[in-house]
Image (tube, rainbow, N blue to C red; front, top):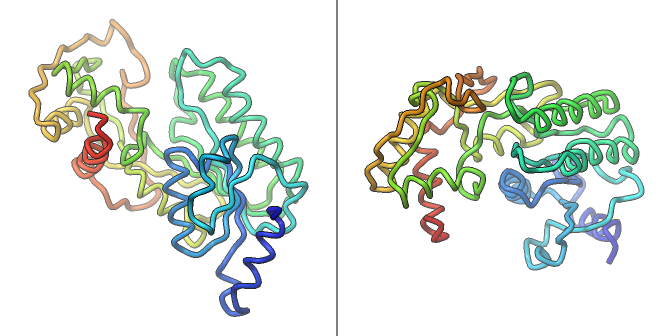
Length: 287
């Protein structure tokens, strides 16, 4: 059955009163860390989802409300909304071509295929105006925002702080280092602040009934790197001697304050963020 046949069939299954609340949504990045949480919330709300993925065969066993495809639709006339969550996190070892495909090519493809009027929810980053060594990551993220805003009439740009929680593999090495080695090396001395954000808070504000056109910044409460990692060591039940590296050694992504104002009030504080992440790591036998 084609994607269009799936969407048409699902529309027959809802009555006229509920049809206004049930939407056909096209999603990129729906199999990643944040995307998985967003997809699960949308499914809970009863929406019909078509998720673009290269690994379609891995997801055929999942919920019936989500249809996984490796093909772009010819057009988006039968979709009520687009979620663009495809992305690559900052890493100096990742070539530009990878960032270009995720952050530039996909938004351009959406613009080429979808009408101006289709509402778009785009996952960006609170670091969009920051100067860091992850220049390629930030610059391609900026381009993705510009591309979508120049084409679509209704774009919600969600800019979260660093995201933690169940499913987070990006920050797993930090937890592993504390668990296995019992050390952590904060720069400079762990006194710089950042705004850890729970993935469930990000998913909540990305729901169609919450997200509105414009920029929506999401950031957890500011906390020092030192306090955050001490809480990590407490949940991992391990002592954590800190090897303090002076600021002149390396002034990088987490080497300076990264504090952002949140446009919405969030539910999770940083101890809760850490406990949820550690619980998931332990369930998956990752730490």
